[in-house]
Structures are given as structure tokens and as C-alpha cells.
Length: 464
Ligand SMILES: Cc1cc2nc3c(=O)[nH]c(=O)nc-3n(C[C@H](O)[C@H](O)[C@H](O)COP(=O)(O)OP(=O)(O)OC[C@H]3O[C@@H](n4cnc5c(N)ncnc54)[C@H](O)[C@@H]3O)c2cc1C
Image 1 (cartoon, protein in one colour):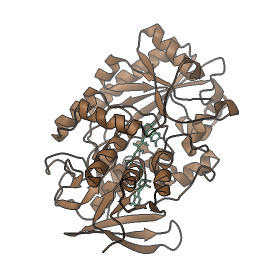
Image 2 (cartoon, helix red, strand yellow; image 1 turned 45 degrees about the vertical axis):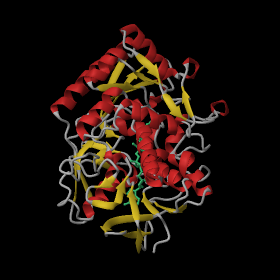
Image 3 (cartoon, rainbow, N blue to C red; image 1 turned 30 degrees about the vertical axis):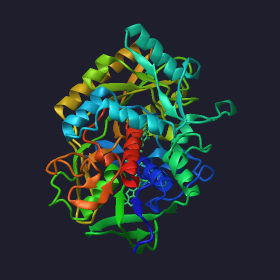
Image 4 (cartoon, helix red, strand yellow; image 1 turned 30 degrees about the horizontal axis):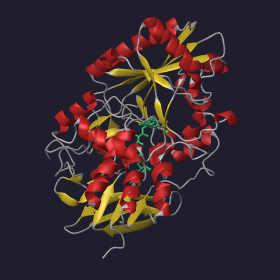
């Protein structure tokens, strides 16, 4: 007999949420996490230290061609600790595409809205207003209005951000020091701890063995230096390591032969950043640095969206892919920069493999359709920067994937999906998956609210 009803591997948006709802439903849950356990008063304070300590790959990982960089959190709370926490429901376009790709009936607007209603009541959500726009947002809005592009205010998971005390949102990408941002840690894990959730951090699981009445998982404890081998068993195990983490564990477990779709259908909403230089201070890093985005039905149809983003100076310096004096010159003008990005609703043409040392290899081609969407987005950005009066425009040559989706997709057919509609790995009744690796394709919309909604759905099924 094992001590826990459920073991969940990975404590991010999917795993942390599920742990809370299961624990609240009376189950005994063990939550395992590869990274460290930080809290609001222990998050690193500098951008460089946070980059090194809070992310897999020491800050950034790349595809097999080193063309696209990927960011994912490695700590209790997962990527939700470093995310911006913009929380959107999927629209009918995204939900219907999921139903078509997966064959799953509950992917319909009515059923999904019931789930969204339930989880939103457990989150603090704030929709921005005009007086919360910073300089970057103002330039974006005024240029969109001039050009007739539709835009809208974003909704963010946040409580009291304390801007009147001088706090800036860009710093909470290193972990929120106020427990305001609705990370999985704040919204779910800490609440589940009070209910008795057991959390073991610095435990990295390498592989899984599926038995008829239990699942065993193997890995090691310890981040650096001596690593101790560990083994856990439970009647039910849930993998929630994110698209990279879960797919890697599944591939390392040797499941590829029985699950031909394993490792396929990776998508990531590739992002491309642009800067416009203004004569006056923009201070794009100040206050709520991301409060508005494009909401143009034409852009949605054409498969891209524009976001009004920025980053701290260390990350920004990596985005300027120029050398020497030109790089210095760009950094000197940090406060004068207007910044915009296009995020492409990409095809799920990416694929994961592992090499013979167990390292994850990420293949992420940009398809012809992806490139067409990107080009259309770039042309809209150029129009906006021009209409906003930028005297110089710069396109970064770095592209990023922050929304890591697919690899263990959900669907009715075991030939082209990995997980069945009940979140079980096809043919393995005690093994479940609950994170963004399930996504059948790219929604073109921020994913985290839907990851949370699916975790809620799984919890209801398991508790009933
Ligand atoms: C900078 C940034 C900004 C973002 N902004 C937004 C936003 O505004 N809105 C939005 O919706 N989304 C945003 N995202 C994306 C969002 O954070 C992710 O899509 C979401 O958090 C993924 O949830 P997940 O549960 O799939 O994985 P994660 O949250 O990444 O959790 C996976 C966890 O599993 C752990 N793990 C992995 N492998 C193992 C293993 N072998 N053993 C043990 N533990 C393991 C990891 O360390 C991690 O903690 C952003 C992401 C980034 C990086």
C-alpha cells in the first residue's frame, strides 16, 4: 500500500492547480518538483540571478537549429512564477479547432465556459483601464486608433500590486515579492499546503513504470553535487511537467512504440520583438508594462496578435542582436524605447525526441503558413511604430516560445494522440497527464487559464 492517493510530478499551472483541488476534495497528495522552493521573500532580487536560478537551462533553452529560444520555469509554481499572468478564455475559434483536432465533445464553448466560471471564482482577476496604461501602451493605443486597428484591455491575475509604493510589474517576472500575481504558488499550492499537501522540491523524475494497479516513478533528489536516486509508487500518478518536462519523461520511459503520437504536435506561439525609438521617455518597463493588446478580428483571422510588451534591461540587451558601439547606443536609449511583439498562431509542426543521454531535442520548424502570419504581423507592427512617430525602428533577430504546448496531445484516437478524453495515457489506466503538453494545437490565445480549467476538470473526475 502506498501513502498517497495521488503523486503529481510538476507544480506549475497544471500540477499546482490539480494538487489544490484534489487535496481540497479530501485526497492525500504528494507534489514533486524538480526545482527549488522559493517564496515571496526568497525570490532572487536581480534579473541575472533570477534568470540563472528560476529557469531550466539556466535561463533559456533552444531548438535544434538554435533559432528559437524557449523559457520555462524550474521551481515550485513552475512557469507561472515567471509568467506575466494574462488570463484569457479561449474563443469559439480556438475551442472548435480543438474539437476538430481531438474529436473530444467537451471542447465546446458552453462546457468550457462552465469550467472557466468555476476557476475564475478562485482567482483574483483584474481588467486594466485607461489610467493604468503606461507610456508604451499609450503609444500603441493611439497609433492603433489612427490606423483603425482594434485593440483591447488585457485581464491579469493579480491582487494588490502596490504601484503607488513604486513596484513595477516587470520585476515580478522574477517571482512576485508581494504574493499579488496569481501564480500557481499563490492561487493554489500555498492554499493546498494549509490543507495538508506534501511538497518535495528538488526531485527530478526521469522515467515511469506502469503496472496494472500502481505506477512507479524513478529519478533523483538534489540539484547539484551528490544526487540521490529516488523511487515512488502510488495507485495513480499524474505527470504535470509541462510540454517539455512531461514529454521528456514519457519518451525516457520508452513509451514511443506503443504511443506513436508521443513527442509530436509541438506548438509555441513564436514571438518576434520590435522596437521603435522615440524622442521623449517612454519608460516601457514602468508600472503595468503589459495592459493592452490587439483585438482586431482581421488579425485573429490572419493568425497573429500584437502585444504591448517589454523586459528588464538584462533581457532587453539580449534582444539587440547588434555588436559593440551600436549595442551600447541601443542600451543607452532603453528609456526611449517603444516595444511591440507579434505572436504567431503557429501550426503544431514541432517535434520532441530524446538523445541517448536522455536530453530533450526540440525540433521547431516555422512552416510556410507560420511565416506568412509572421510577415503580416510585422507589416502591422511597422505601420503602428510609424504612426506612433518612431524616428528609428529595430527588429530583433531573436525569436521566443513562451507558450510550450503539445507533445502528449489529448484526443479520442490513440494513433494521433497520447492521452484519452479522461486524461489517461492511452492504454495506461493509472497514469494521467495534466499540463500544456495536452494541447491539441495552438489556440493563439494565452494558455494558462485553460491549463487551469483542464486541471479543474480532471480533479472533478478523480474526486467524484
Ligand atoms: C516569461 C513568460 C511569460 C508568460 N506569460 C504568460 C501569460 O501572461 N499568460 C499565459 O497564459 N501564459 C503565459 N506564459 C505561459 C505559461 O506560463 C505556461 O503556458 C504555463 O505556466 C505552463 O503550465 P504547465 O503546467 O504546462 O507547465 P509549467 O508551469 O512549466 O510547470 C511544469 C513544472 O514541472 C516541473 N518539472 C518538469 N519536469 C520535471 C521532472 N522531470 N521532474 C519533476 N518536476 C519536473 C518544472 O520544473 C515545472 O515547475 C508565460 C511563460 C513565460 C515563460
